[in-house]
Image (cartoon, rainbow, N blue to C red):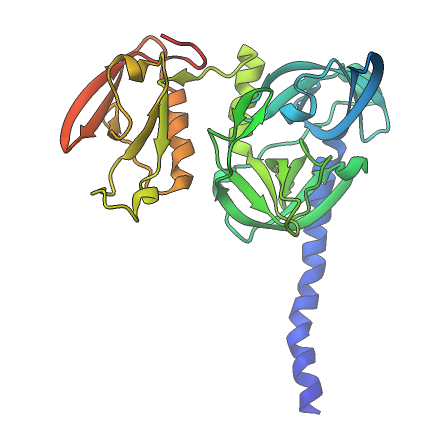
Length: 343
């Protein structure tokens, strides 16, 4: 009799908690689902002298009452003709407001009166991605394989995954941020959709999937999305400064004979026509400080934050780098320029 009662007692509390989890999932889903959209990108292509229509799809979500939609740049950032299908089954035209290929984010807009003729516009709210921990429950929403209005469930399996940069519209994407890794299923078509916590807040934008793995997907953290979205709506671009530095984490040299400390970051390459080249910085230099603040990347995952610090430098104001070369430390003054400009 005891052999039967003991497993039942162990299972009892788990079943009791399932109802609470289900209720939280439903409440969170219902907060975001009305803001979810299915995006159809219609392009005309010419192949072999014949004009054809090419249709791509993805996901997105409303972020304000003005009808602005966040999605991925690779979904709609260069689209000529866009439609979005809303939760109320309405299909409306959308236009591209602005995009940022460096983070693979874009802002679209629809006429809110056309999209929501029977009531106020609905939109999702952002949460703080910096507060996430591995093991937190999340839901990935979107249109996987063009199957609109889908949701998958899982956990955050890594909160600061570093991925190789990819080319989006000729630009490196993923240089300025790490990624949220989740086992909530993300498939082609989920791109641009929200990753949602159990409070019903968007804590990421679904962007990439590892199709060779079993449900390993990646999302852009919501704090990155919010910062980029604000810049795109205000400036139609994301202002970034550039010094021409290619950085390398110190742990990549752990197996070499080089005498590397825990302080600083290695300068792996200096771009031609860059402010760094103009002042004489060289590959192999060890950068220790930026504007008198520590500038260190011991591990790969710490490098994107350093690139973001450089990007945030004000144009027209000199930046000071403390550099060690052959054990000799020296300050260099550089003039930041907008990303993409040469000196």
